[in-house]
Image 1: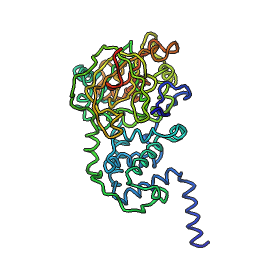
Image 2: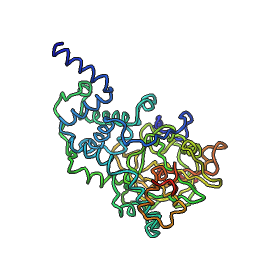
Image 3: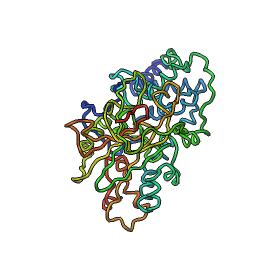
Image 4: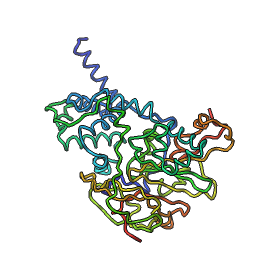
Length: 218
Length: 211
């Protein structure tokens, strides 16, 4: 979807402001929101693309008006509400009002190290040969799905060159809807002038990682 | 003053110090704990892991090893995930890592324009600026302007290569080894490696800047 999260190249954002000696978290609630979000993925059963869509799928004023961990929190609440793990009246009341929904698994302290070490690898067995090879010229498709996608607006319809092959990976556009549909994944590199025209910097090259169905031969 | 008034006073005091978001997160944790979905001890351990164990010192050790050991450097550039695992760093948000090497002619910079993808096992959690609209928008269109925001410019003739992390591949910059460090140990070299030098928005410290 074309939400406020798709920020590549937008002009309204101002200078980058690094913070000297920045702490990992800026408030106690950020620590707890971070940890709750990681821990709830296990009983909740959602995947990373469902999480991303729950965060990004909101009006621009919300996306831009909330802090980073406030967006995490809003995304988490949405995922839990959709699955009936918590209810709106419980969030309103700030306490449990209904029995817990049975969940298959939870994350115990004993399981934390193994969960983090395993992570969530997205590479899968290749079921077919790659359509493109390193050095091939490709054009990104001009797609506008109303659902989750990882093809940013600023590269759509542009011609680039395949620089790396990464094997076959879970396709986020379908994974956000519960289907892995793994595809070949490529790093595709674009010249600055191709992306930004005369405003572009010819000494800059930018790449995205693009799944095969985002690409056509150029 | 009655006991009731005293309690009421405290109630107001708490509200003045705790934001709505803090209260919401506390309440949510209570709900999820009481329903048996989360274990507070697991939450504490997750926080402790990313506050004290996983962070850019890990990446600095990887860079210092690559600067010191040509065979390791070759393995890192060929396939970074197993090379980094040799030092014990692996897992969540670093399942598929690619190391990209700076040279006198090419400077690499990593961004995630769509969210906040970042190589956690080697750099920890991303700083606020990395997740902010200014960085996410500007890095792909005007990376030299980003470097100016960080207070430096590259020598003339240096091209820039920007890696937008749109998939689960995590990019990690191998900066150039500072001159004048020929006989330095790996440990001393690691002290020169800044977090930003591994994102591409900074350079390693020079020997005279070392602590």
